[in-house]
Length: 127
Image (cartoon, rainbow, N blue to C red; front, side, top):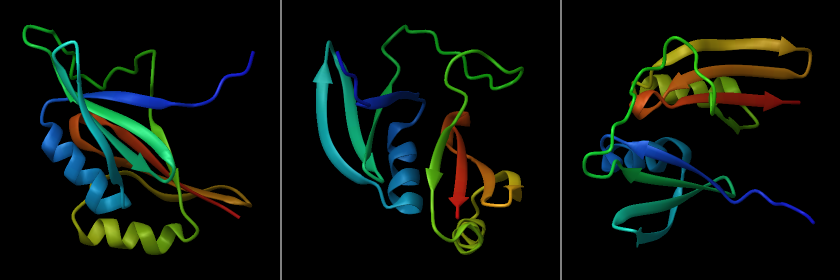
């Protein structure tokens, strides 16, 4: 049996705001909109990977806390060839950096930004 990546799904307090964030800052492309069991879902392609976004269902409780750390998805990571240049563009557009660009090892630079609803996004450059 073999497995392949399909998608990550995010619950959003404001799906339009979250979609706009990924479309504007990461060149995402909308793949499809559908409804599953009464829940609207929008799928975006970000760098060849699919991410689903939906609002909470009526009456569904959602925990918005990021702190303290929790089990489950901690962050997503997006890779670029020139992190310094891309970080400068994001900063100029007012994106909040939770960890500025740093060197992880001789071949890897990274940073973290805050996306809508506390989505933590790692930005990477691997040489």
